[in-house]
Amino acid sequence: MDGAYGKSNRANRFSAEVRARAEDTLPMSDRVLFCRASQGCLNCITGAQSTFYAHAAILKNPDLASDRAKRDADLSPEIKRVWKENNEVYGIRKTWHQLQREGFNIARCTVAR
Image (tube, rainbow, N blue to C red; front, side):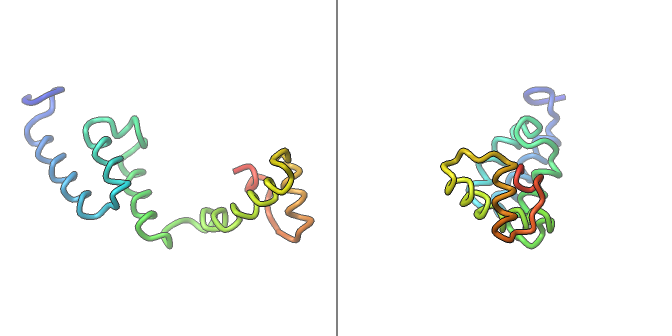
């Protein structure tokens, strides 16, 4: 085994190829995260590599997000609005009840998220 931390030259070449490909496809904010991750700390930052690439794909094309994630993104401003209108003291349950009074069909767990 050659190189630092017991990586072989083949592994180092692979990392360089993956980094080069990421620089072409990812936006600047994700490149910084990817550069840190590809230097041996990917599991510390994001978990599995597949999770990182799935997240990067969703950032690139929001239509790939799950229906739940899309609905949460749509409802998030309303939840924050109700919370702020009530001096940021309403908890999950009261915020949920207020949204129901306003006509939103929303689950309590959605407010909690």
